[in-house]
Image 1 (tube, rainbow, N blue to C red):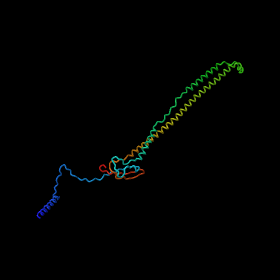
Image 2: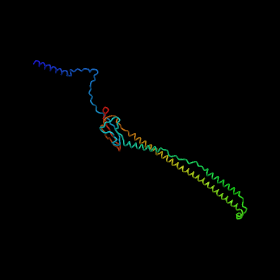
Image 3: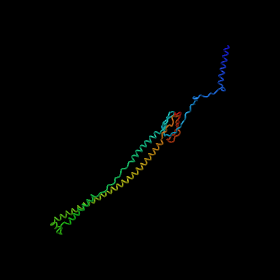
Image 4: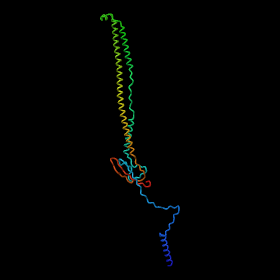
Length: 267
């Protein structure tokens, strides 16, 4: 039994030694050897939340939904329908601007009048008349004062005088015809001048209308470009998960929504 008693004593002494070693009053702090980094337990951080406000005209313009994973630069909202409508309108306006920018057909100046042909005909007819007058004056006189005697005895002279008179009449008619043609040519030229003045008035009116319509089209195009610029695509500045998509307000056709992202270590 003596060895049992000794064993129990040793056990009790060992237990006491352990308890003493664990006692705070007897704990000795030893320095951490160089080159060994103490291990620190890091508690998990809560995800950062980033809120983004977007303005759309239809719910389908919001391109993400709750629970979606997004990358940096991924589209969150885009007014697709409105953008397509504006782009189609811009193309139509550009086509109209190109057509309206085409120059108007020029107005031809009336040709320089030339009345040389009519004037030459008048000069010839007058010269012919002068020759006929000379022939009439140079014709030999009738021998008798009584016409019936001349008819009997100077038949040849009478016939010649008649031919000269007929020639004189024809020459005078030719003069009158040439003068009439000259006057007609001058009238036609005056009509051309008048029509040209009307065409110039119409041209100026069309030019002013074209400039006005072109300015109006350019202004409309600028307004469309401004609207397109305002339809900026909203992209995610961070990677993460869509926590919530909330409609904040709606005025007429404008919808304001708030997209909340959970961002943790880049997503």
